[in-house]
Image (cartoon, rainbow, N blue to C red):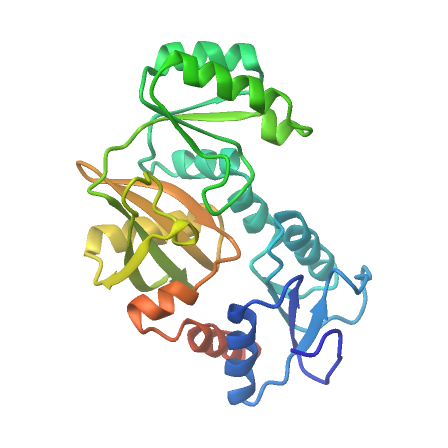
Length: 286
């Protein structure tokens, strides 16, 4: 990917690190006759109210870079995928859970503790085992499964040393016992593109592909598809991935506003980049 090179296209791809996903998106757009403008937000400043492209694909890995990039382009009237509102709602797990709960969707029993003192009260109310995670982060980082008070006090002391309020904030949830896997579904414009199981590695309780989980595609049932579409709508996301836990039904866990899909393509054989490019083409023709 060449960086920061403008074209006459009405489509822009904004990113900070060019992953395989961004390369596949550019390739798919090009195959449809769309030559996107490529903007590296780590190197190029973004001007408010400039003559921006009609459609902007927001792909920075950093949640704040993504949200700010979308907000600036929205100021020029661009249609962003996703919007700054959706990216912020997905990027902060407290906001995500609030949106899902407000939409009447099933989530694990959850509490938010803003201080170490309130976190201590939360674990008394929740009981063990419990899951503790900060509002910001991905790939399973700083997500902890706690089984006793000594381990929890140690975690609280370490997190209290973090430099930002987001990392000192605790989302405390009941531990959902799953069949050794979780579910990831990608939704685009109210359509489920497919689903995959992520089977956790032995001696690992988290099911993130970044932590070695094995991805296997499957066909989701109608109930699962419906709740994932509702989750996408709850955060006002056009193109999102939805993570679901299985245990006596489905629990919505997280929604990602800048979804990665390399493992998803490998597992489902669905050309997600082409689906996205074809959607962009439909938007341009409106």
